[in-house]
Length: 282
Image (cartoon, rainbow, N blue to C red):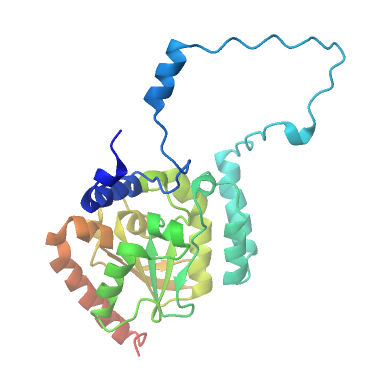
């Protein structure tokens, strides 16, 4: 094995970055174990087979606490959608809706997520930004639009004179991170749609901006890609009257495809103009 004293700082940084990108952030043991040496020892000197347990015809069954927990029963898809609709409709305000989301157990994404990332920014803001699903950073912190996405989105919004945390309200199509950073499935979106619609209705923004493909298709009920949906304006009724909705490139997309930043800047200027015309920008 390589002595830890021989590893350079750069190698350690590369190793830690590899672990983080692979989703490994917890050490299972305080010291490394040479599994090859253990396997070689086991091959050279196999352990004797354990003796057969004595038979006890009247053996008591193990207590309930000693039995392994059983996996939760799978809820049918249609029932999960109906449960979400019922929970969303029963929420009278954003606090009640947040509690309903955090207590919702009919979406399997919740079992793998650390946090239910319901909202971010300022409630009551005239502008609402909607992403597809929380990022890995959002899942770690429990805060919407954090990490690299939040930094870049904050710079984009500040370019038109707004503060991400003070002048915008944030939400997601799906409030739980998807393993591997993948996009939510159509079923995930269908189950969580009632929560998002109710959240927009209760938040009462004048303008909603869908960030990226997933959010744009979900909010605009369209199949076109973001490259066609961006820059357009559509009036959508989320249950409390029509709201102006437009689409904008997601920060993660712009990091990978910087050639689209010029289009994003034009869309931001159009957003600023619409905010001013609607009296939503102080």
